[in-house]
Length: 370
Image 1 (cartoon, helix red, strand yellow):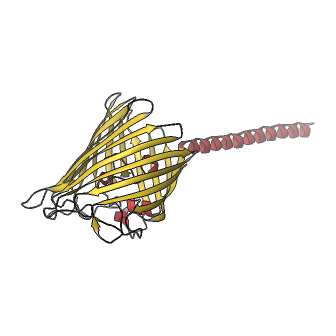
Image 2 (cartoon, one colour):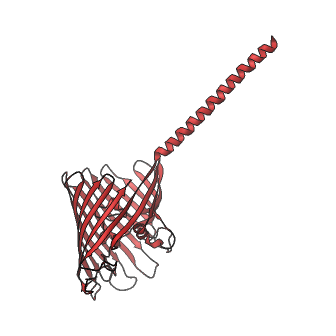
Image 3 (cartoon, one colour):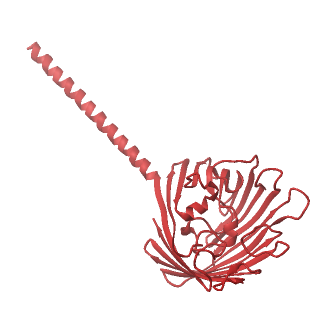
């Protein structure tokens, strides 16, 4: 009788222990599963793939003649880039790893040629409060109307102001929410486009004041600092205004204006460039929008070379008009565009190998976004 009682007791204890162990294992598995699901819910993957066809009217199509702007400057069929963006958004902290592959991506990180660099952006951020956000790492520039990714631009080819402004920065920036409509940003960064390291003992300071409303926004952007070794160049100052507004349900108008000046290290005049561009766009249907970019861009005192033809004093300008259609087919967007560049001095070559002031071209871009 005693033996049977002990045996029954042991069976009960074993059953309770087994049940407890099973429940604990199941709870841990559910907790682990919940943690994984929670992690995956905060991760995001996005990006794009693009390519284009380009043809010159009245000029050679052997890649020797093209507007001196970024990316869409090869003749015939050409590839843009594959862009993969991995992001994590936590309650307070997160990161973005933006990788690019292909010629457009290589041009975007041009100062890293030879290092197998594929990083377009790589930064971590901390939402310190609801009104303050700190970002540390490599991020695309806050200046200008256009961006590196073709998904962020209406026109497929790019402007002169974008092509010769900064592309990316590495440093620390602080974003501030001042009110429901007003924002501000302060930053300290490496010299422009030195994203992997800082080879100079100099830094650039950036600032932004923004205003946003339901029908549009406006941003005043500033940067100042020495872009190279001390003793070789003076400080550079750039002021940039970017704004865009929905004038009605179908009509949008964007404006970009910029001014850049680099002081000489010794006696002399400052050099640089300035420009303005208008971006009117009209939506004709749910799938098709027609837009024009009209840009005036001027170089003074030899502030840039190889961009437009310069006179004996180092001055020159260009007027560029780009008419672009944007047609959506699901996640695929086709962008046919006609572009005319006209310079103040001879800069292009025609089919007779004669110097000319103008170049007309056609571009068909194809962009898939995921």
